[in-house]
Amino acid sequence: MIYFKNNRLNIIYKKSLSYCKKFGSHCVGHDYRHTTRVLDNALFLIKRMKLQNQINFKVIIASSLLHDISRSYGFCGLVHGLKSFEIIKLFLKQELNFNLGELDLIKKVMTNHCIEDVNLRKTLEEKIIYDADKLDGFGVRGLWRLSIYTIFEREEGLRGIWNRIVYKMPERRKNLHFKVSKMKSHFLLLFFI
Ligand SMILES: [Fe+2]
Ligand SMILES: [Fe+2]
Image (cartoon, rainbow, N blue to C red):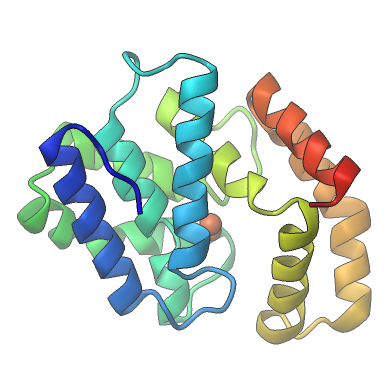
């Protein structure tokens, strides 16, 4: 559990987390345990790069916790980010009181978190969530998540796991936006933790 000094942030955190636990638990490897680690990673990056005054924390919290919700509704691949936004749009508007500008930013953050084009993400929030999400794919936990995903969701077997380790992991590391993210991913790979 995370505690934010700002009460509004706490409300967004608690409501988003309980939404994720309630509706996002049908996809192994992408449930609330993954999304809370993404939020931890995002907060780590923000702190390390001293970006506290340059980002919208509300957007970071909701996007971290809900970016993969559509996976529990059967979506995957390039569209699952946009589908996640479409599923939670009303909740964001009515329950969390996000304004139109913030909704637009969350839409970009979620849509672009699963598209491998490093030039696509323009805002800090998009880059932070992309890196925070990918950082959960390195180390032993990343390997476990990758194996579960490849075998049970993609049904690709051991060859699929091998391809992802040899080709996708280095590509993902290369596409990380921040030096801090690359260092952390290197650390996770090096010590395999
Ligand atoms: Fe995702
Ligand atoms: Fe994710």
